[in-house]
Length: 161
Image 1 (cartoon, rainbow, N blue to C red):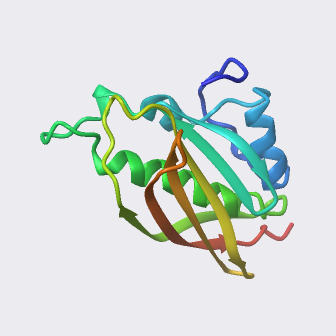
Image 2 (cartoon, rainbow, N blue to C red):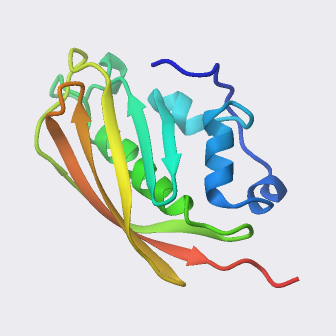
Image 3 (cartoon, rainbow, N blue to C red):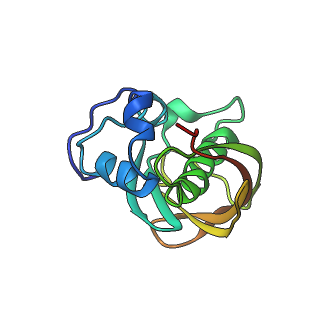
């Protein structure tokens, strides 16, 4: 996976709330802010962000295997949760936050350490005042569908000063 050298860490709450979601995510892509520690743990990377859309890439590997000698479904769920949730994050105004209420992922093709880089793309379907929904898909380098998902997130408004 190419891109800027990544550092990992947690952005301060003040930093998080001081800017809109799209600005924050693009600063992470450019390496101006650290990527969250979960990205290092899973081996995934935020690669694209625009209003209502986000892309993560990742490399399934042996470290992601389950007892059935294939990549655990939690890898697909986690990269999809990241892509769909961050698609919603791109719509946040400064001071707003969100959390996932539910996510449904359908796995349609298994992964192994030979799958190669995968791409999770999320798109906002609806952005309301207190909830948002997004959908997306996980594909391999040849564009084959590995999984598809839908999520609902709760939006927390900016605190009044």
